[in-house]
Image (cartoon, rainbow, N blue to C red; front, side):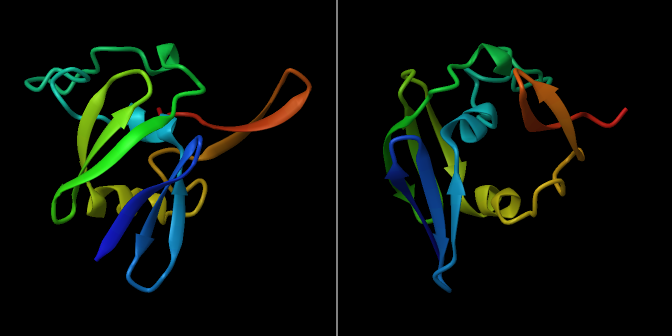
Length: 119
């Protein structure tokens, strides 16, 4: 059993039964919304560009609407449901083990890690 909770002004955490806790940034979660306001349910195409989302987005509330399903309200007013097992499946992956590898790029004098889509 896992539990999702707000753990900071700009962070959620998912905690699994063994006590392991994985931090989740609200922007990461907001980009993964799969509701009809975020994607075309027929084609799966995004309806908004993720780069247009507020980088300072936060979470207003988290409610467990049924076991393992959470309704999350973001500070931009958007609300979406997520399955804990799907969040956890990505949250536990080590950096660079997602759908694309990390690449270091230099921006504004700081080295920042970005993932570049595989071509």
